[in-house]
Image (cartoon, rainbow, N blue to C red; front, top):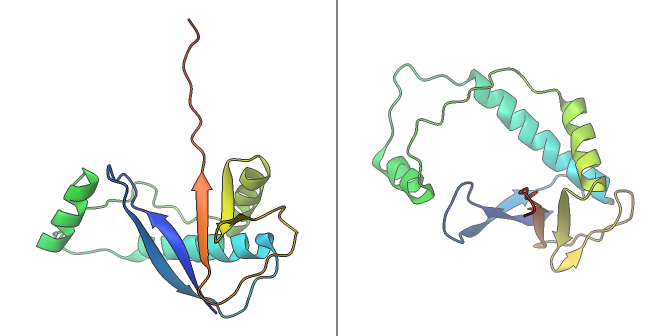
Length: 139
């Protein structure tokens, strides 16, 4: 099954949202399964990138241009070089969803509770929206 994730460029000052194509081997039937797939692939990717090490750091012209658009040109150093625990990541993701820290939309329809059925079709667009907590003081 082929799905698309709406991705906002991290740190981008522009309203720049791209669609990233993802091919799933099996179709998740609940939101919990969809979150599990997403978190598992992100943890795996993070843990694999820890191992990658260049002998000489350099940026191509394309990388410099892409990073300049986000407002920060850097080598992309990872300061947390410890492997992440998948179990803890899943637990945090489920808790954050239940606490309303983020919402998931399939097309224009908001996904419900974690264990409710979701209907996914080929070429559906998924959007994860993380809410930012604002703080300040009252006058």
